[in-house]
Each structure stands twice: as C-alpha cells, then as structure tokens.
Image 1 (tube, rainbow, N blue to C red):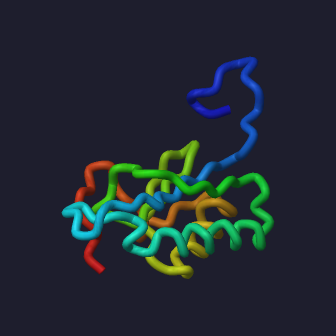
Image 2: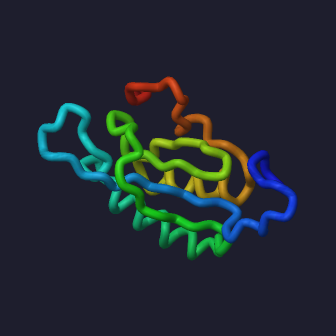
Length: 121
C-alpha cells in the first residue's frame, strides 16, 4: 500500500504507469517540444521493449504537455513520481531494467523538481 491508498481501496491495476510526453508546439516556439526532440520514437520503443521484457504490470502511455518542455523528451513514472529525460534507446533500456524491473533509480537521467534547464551532456 502506498501513501495515498486507503484501507479498502482496490489493488492498483498496474504497479507502475509511465507517461511519455509527445506534445508538439509550433516550430520555433521558445520552449521547444518533446515531439520535436524525438519523443515519439522513444515512446514507441519503450512500449515495445516493455512488452518484450514481460513488464505486464507496467503501462506505457503517451501524454500531452507535462510542462517540462525545455528538458524534453521527458517521462514520469508513477506512483513514485520520478521524472527522467531519456535521449536514446540505451537510456530507455536502462530505465526499464533499473527502475521498472529492479526498483532502482537511474540517477544520471533523473530530473529534479527545481530543474529548469537540461543537464550538461
């Protein structure tokens, strides 16, 4: 039972829910967009790989704007509320294996709540 569940609540349908922003803003928008930074292929890859890895207890969903455009592409995993900024298939593989299979965090890809700019690459 997590902090928000109450006695008598039904069990969660999924153990984890991943929201991958695929929002598109007009070309030249000052905040950019996750879609323009390759979010759709990364989200599609994540969904396929999760299935290949047998992560049936996890749901990978596309999301509209998650309001962290400058950091995109971004994903957030609930119920933990951990944000990541994956850039490659290897990043996605690491998130799936470490976070969703093993319950560990991928610190090098994590976004902090106060973070406004992308981490230096």
